[in-house]
Image (cartoon, rainbow, N blue to C red; front, side, top):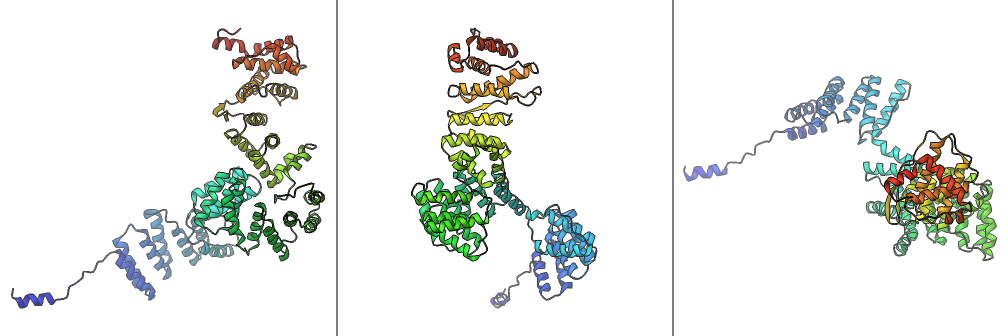
Length: 576
């Protein structure tokens, strides 16, 4: 080839081949839509489908164009083919079907398709539009649409339910539900915030701090999380982080009344009474919450800590006027005089109920009130769970016994958790085991006892025994009292099991239990033998105040029914 021809060839323009694929036709279809050229758009979407027949989006685009052109039946054929043959999980097709049916005035079919969409679609892309369509269908059909659930709002509904449980004091149930919500939707910060609060109410500080920290990592300015974290820091004695957080809160001026109230109570709880009082007064001045007695109580608590005794008296009197049935305002008005005189310290907690010690003092005279108070008032309920974790030893004993009067699932779970806490006292765990058994918990119990995890086998169940007799209980209580401090929780549990076993075997011919102390001493005698503990009749006579002959007689009766000696002979041949 000559040089001239080569140069001419080099000057020829390069031809870039056009790549015809689904993307190309999709882009052409969109351009046509922008110019309202529906026929062309439909043609291009059909070509996109030919190139990618397994792509449901292309089919839906074609159905959408047909719907825009008023060709609803053709559109529905395509949408049903997507659901039946290509992608049954493309739930938005049901929404498109519902729209088409509504335009065709087939309202029953539209309702059925819309219900399928709402009950199955996870994303909720068309929730607002669905609400409008529901209104139309309700009007046209002259009745409400029956919906089992809205899938995309399941977590919202569940969160509302969890909040109700939290406010009612059912913390374990709330925790379970909130953990499930977060498992499904990790970014649901309100649920995570309330989970941290639920952990706190249950006394689980470490978990509460971790949970709230997760909220703040996602949203550093979340006021509820900041306030919750401040309270958690205070009760876990983390003074350094607490002071840094208080400085940040003091620079924050919330606007919404709910946020102002949260800020005020938080600052009061952490000891910033001056700032708390300022926020409480802001709320009272607005008028919206001025009729709320608890708000006047909180303002009074802040005022009395600032030695503004006249202001505190004014607020408590207003609370008493607004809530004449509550004992709280009158109690603090009486105590105010002692605070003025320096005989009492001002209250430091911001709860609208009596101090924990005062509640117990009143309940000693009328124990029946405990059950009602625990069931009715979530604040009192939370204070019990709090005291179970963080009270002194005497208070914990009272709490465990009081919780036994309620005996609901929440209480049972709290006491079971108490049994596996390595930091709790072994004697307190014995009390908790006895309370659990006394309220009917028959299954096996796991206990962390003296640094060792043990399992208390399920208590023997007997269909022979009727309602538990008070005379049988008296024997049990005297045996427990005599064995307290001498036998561990397993041994006391085995004594209880032995007593139930004996009564079950001899019922209905249960002997008259005239000398309950003698029967109690006999139960300890056999419990000691079963656990290879040394025990003498002289020791039992001394502690139970009953003769050796009586102890021996009752021990023989128990042995005759239960065959203890024979069982011990099999395991320890030298036993006599």
